[in-house]
Image 1 (cartoon, rainbow, N blue to C red):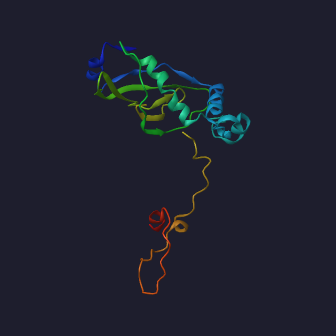
Image 2 (image 1 turned 30 degrees about the vertical axis):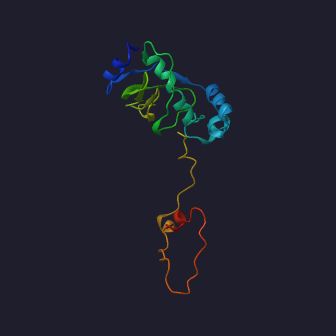
Image 3 (image 1 turned 135 degrees about the vertical axis):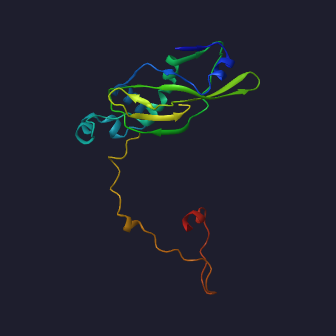
Length: 194
């Protein structure tokens, strides 16, 4: 664990990788509790028997947001700033879920400091990043990349239509002859017209 004496030490570490967290187990029990707390009880997360039959990993997979929610636990094992009264999660940017996390996987995150900006009167807003994606113990592929800090849908997505079936008809120009009837404009009409 890296300990920073004050805000100046944090600002001096901008651009550095701070460290790698301890492993965190993503058990089925943890997935079930997250599903209950969020109301996201899709079968790919909670139905162990169906997942064993239908998912490529033979087990349920964790929610993408559960993966992101583990980031604070990663921070606790990587860094500490002395003298901080409290901290507030300001949000996450550029979050991508790169790979599914099967139940029973262990995760860890590599934490770095992207930016540190003074906030009056006596605060500091720090943007952390996972420069290298969060890793799963059974693979070298990353599963989540975020600035500050999957839903696995590919196997469940309906088959795509052939490109010819998706081609648009040529757009007609608005206006035209004097007898052309104009459509009533409703909210969002510009988006549909494109």
